Amino acid sequence: MPDNTIPKGAAEYEVATRHMVMERDINPFGHLFGGTMLAWLDEGAALYLMEKIGYRNFVTVSMDEVKFRAPGHRGDASQILCRIMRTGRSSVAVKPTAVSHT
Image (cartoon, rainbow, N blue to C red; front, top):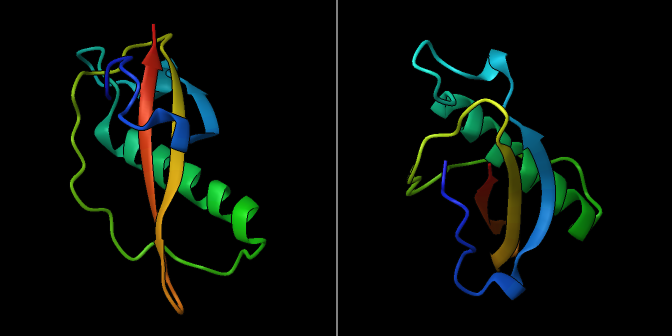
């Protein structure tokens, strides 16, 4: 999970969703499961896109260059921020990012 640095060009991002890291989300070492964060990023991008384009029938084709900068811990509040990077005739590229508040 990224630390609480705001991404470059943060003014272009919008809050898509928020999550609190709960006991069920952490591994035996007290760190957030990477798969949980991936699911949150995917869900946040989907909710953001639904709101922006008013269409719900789409799928995630890929998630490229996922970087975990720091582990999430129980009690952290994670914001999922998104922005549209490009649109095509039948595709949209959304860039989600996570910001953690401990």
